[in-house]
Image (cartoon, rainbow, N blue to C red; front, side, top):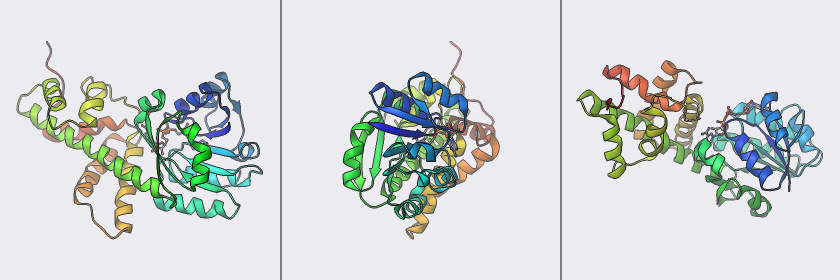
Length: 297
Ligand code: NAD
C-alpha cells in the first residue's frame, strides 16, 4: 500500500526500510536531510512536509522523539492535518495517553482518524521486524493497517479507546526502565564486594534474576562499556515521567516506579539526555566508587 512515513531516526529508519522491502510504496519526511536520503536510496520518495505527504496518501505513520514533535507533525502548521487525502495518522511514538487523546480530538475535527501504535523491542527489534506493536483505534482502520504493521513486528490490538495502547506501552517501558537500574545496582553491589560482573550476568541469566537488561543490555553495551544500545536517556526519562503522570491521573501511586523515576532523574542530570540509556549504570558506579568491568583473563 502507499504509506507516508515521518521521523526516520533510530526506530523509524529501520521500520521504513522493512516496509519498502515488503513492497509498500513510501513517501518519507524528516527534519534531517541525510536521514531522508538514506531512504530515498532504498526506493522511497521524499516530501518536504507532513502536509505534502498527507496530500498524497491515506495512511501516514510517524516515529518521533517528543510529544511536541508528534503534536506539531499531526496538527501544527504544515502538519498532516492540512492534507487533502489522509484518512489515518498512526503514531508509532511513545507520547502517553493524554497527548494521544489531544491529537485524536484535534484530528477528529477534520475527519482524520488517530491511531496509537507505540512499539517495544528497540533498534534490534525494528531491524529484524520483531517489535511488539501495540495498537488502539477503530477496529476497521486497524484491519486496513494490520498487513503493513505485520512487517515491523507482532501486532496486538489493545482496544478502541484512544490512548489505550499508550498506557500499555508505558507499563511495559516502566518495567524496562526498572530492569536497567535494578540490574545496575545489583551488579555494582557484587563488583564492590569483589565479584566478576561477567560471571554475575551469566548466573543471573541462568537464574531467576533474568531480565531484559541482564539478557540484552549488559552483554551488548554495559560490560563492553560501549554504551551504544540505541535508545537515548532523554527518551527513557520521557517514558518514565509519562508513566508516573499516567498513574497520577488515575489517582494511584506506584511506589517502585517512583523510586525508579528518582534514579533516572539522576541519570539524565549526570549523563545528559543524549547519552545512551545503558549509561544509567555510571552514576550508580560513581556513588559506589567502582567500575563494572569483567576480570581480565
Ligand atoms: P530518534 O531521535 O532517533 O528519531 C527521531 C527522528 O524524528 C529524527 O530523525 C528527527 O530528525 C525526526 N524529527 C524530530 N522532529 C521532527 C519533526 N518535527 N518533523 C520531522 N522529523 C522530525 O528517536 P527514536 O529512538 O527513533 O524514537 C522515536 C520514538 O520511538 C520515540 O517516541 C521513542 O520513545 C520510541 N521508541 C524508541 C525505541 C528505541 O529503542 N530507540 C524503542 C521503542 C520506542
